[in-house]
Length: 298
Image 1 (cartoon, rainbow, N blue to C red):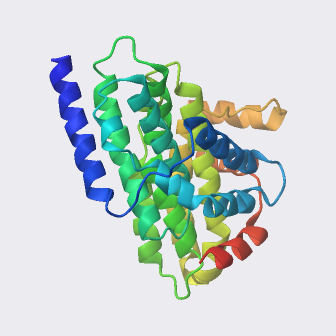
Image 2 (cartoon, one colour; image 1 turned 30 degrees about the horizontal axis):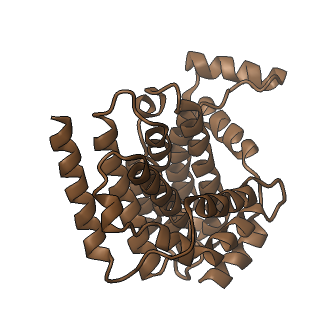
């Protein structure tokens, strides 16, 4: 059974690769260590406490996009390696690169194709890893990155759309709904104790991307649509807050009293507002610089 699954997975991977090798070729002269160092450097930009952190992060991805795209193109000899360490490690790097590219608001054709490859690699890896006991560490890494690729891509699209003239409420609400549908369930996030913390943190990061888009959209959607827009994005905030595992009580007397009321569901409206406040307070604010960066990326 395991052999058949691995053969099927390898065949799927070969199909993915053969369909894209004509458009892109693996970069010669770069090792997995080089790629991992590049990814680490880019993610460090996002984790910075500077107000320009997210703008710098997007610019870093844009500057490295060619290498990141190349990482998602896997040669046939590696793809036929089944569950070999080289194959699993290469796919892990490809999914990591795809996840970074998914954060770009305006991906070009090659970048969009790389994101799609990463999604497919993560699905194939899930199939392979489900038959391995114990599963190698690459499986955990791919699961953490892969489960959020689609929501990252959709949130980036929302961020990009926020800069468009004549933005309408119907478009925004549809995009918010698509983002919510793309998110994993709480059960998916918590089912593996080895990855739960990282997956919760990733949910919080998705909420911060949403927060960056909200004020830009609010400025362009029209005053008559603000209330309806707030209702839609608050619902998504709540979903992301619950996935993030952030504590309602942060030690402050007010927040702990509010957390208690929220836990008892005495006032659903207050509970929603409080969760939104906690999420907004957790995320950094860098909208002004981000708008300039979005213009340059577009």
